[in-house]
Length: 191
Image (cartoon, rainbow, N blue to C red; front, side):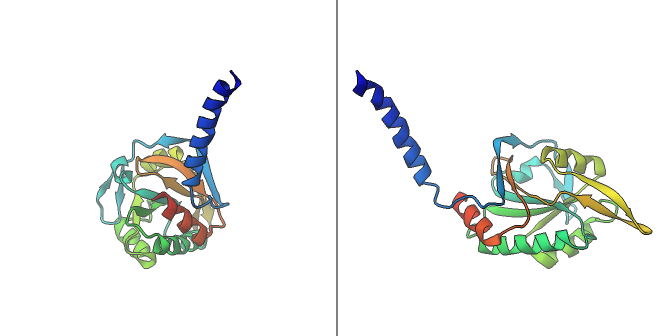
């Protein structure tokens, strides 16, 4: 009787061992997985070439999504430079890097194109009307708001880099400080 009860437990433990042994790269310290992935919807933006963007643009590839803006004095250029290092070490074309502008007043397609191509011509830059950006940002738990700065303004915004899986689901996020080597190793193990 005792052997019969052990058999299901051994099967479960063996299955767990096989599953975990397939995970060759540990998760980076900066990565926070969600307990359950969240399907993204209602994405209505445009890219740096003025093409319409919907949630379908997040299907079929892993996506690293970062919210920022082209007039950002520090966090955005640093993060995009780090994401360029990550992308250069990912061995598959199944990764897209996306900057979503939180400053649609200043970030038109031409401005986005010039800015994003400085970091990597393969990167994408998306924007839209403020309501559409807010809808997308809320789904990814991203905060942003305009802050007066002299006679102009800055945009206060979350700095995490969101990981979206090929099914278009928000899977987790990376927090600063980013470690491009750990991130690229982890992404190579996923892709």
